[in-house]
Image (cartoon, rainbow, N blue to C red):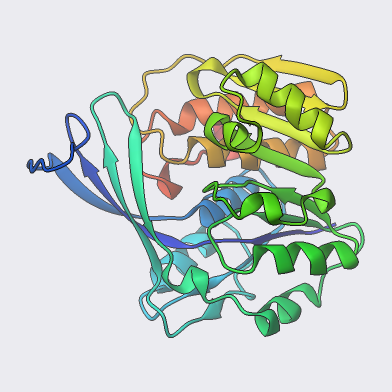
Length: 290
């Protein structure tokens, strides 16, 4: 059993502000910091820090050594990462005094995934292996189709949600990990429980994990539903909280823990993450979670 995360790698430029900028407004930032990030990189680190054997696939540009080294330091196998003539993906992130964030994303090398590269990556994986995907790289539908043909268990975090996602071969997805915005995109429902019910009806075979920030999380499969509280902490930066939750939830299930145990572990890990600044740097190691 191996975990392949085919996902994004971004350089995050994080600006601290008292409140988010409004249209036409100019204001000074309190500080600027540069971190390794990207939903793919963050989730690979979370799974590896939780104790899973993780291989990361994706592409970086000429300045991407920083991102690759960050994964290596987190015990992620980086042998499948490719190089692109495009610049590495990057984000501009505002973090306000309440720890909330808003993110502007530039795809760069993350959008340089082609079919030849997909085939070379998937060649080493098959039945019994897991594939984790987000929506920050190109050719996600093709990756899903090819991976399912090879018998992988496919986990999708449909973020960022786009109008193209409903046309993906979603019937092949074994687990969805999504937040309220993404759930609303699929269902039109703003009420989390109604959105979960609609998703479970549409995809009755799949695990459905709906993260709700400080309100916790919901899990559903078919007619089964479980809820998980959030552990209260003072939020400093929520940037990688969802990725941390996702990585630890996957790790617990792969280890054979129950869904309830997986939800609790993921919630505890996310609570530590939001108490720290940055994305990749804020993801806790397994030994830090009690």
